[in-house]
Image (cartoon, rainbow, N blue to C red; front, side, top):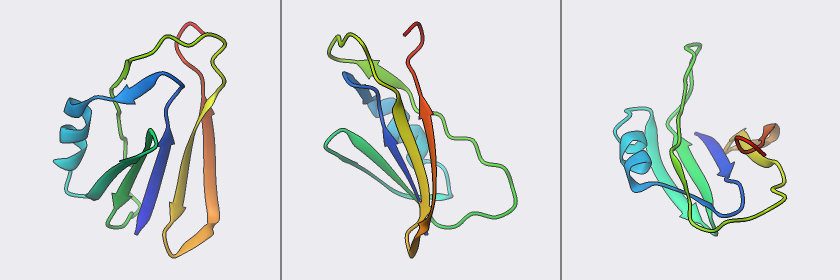
Length: 91
């Protein structure tokens, strides 16, 4: 099982529409949101490229945003962690 862990920028949350669209993908086993971190559990990955889009909405205005992160790792072997950071548009 593969986990994609998305920590949105401060003040942003995933929309319910985004959650619904992700859950309709056959590769997605489960989605959890804990303390504003989105966990997307995938059955497994193969050699095919996969693209995931999350729609976020701003619920609180925050200045001086720090980069947020996306972590991808194997549930059974978390040592192979891949991390990417991103900044908000216009930040």
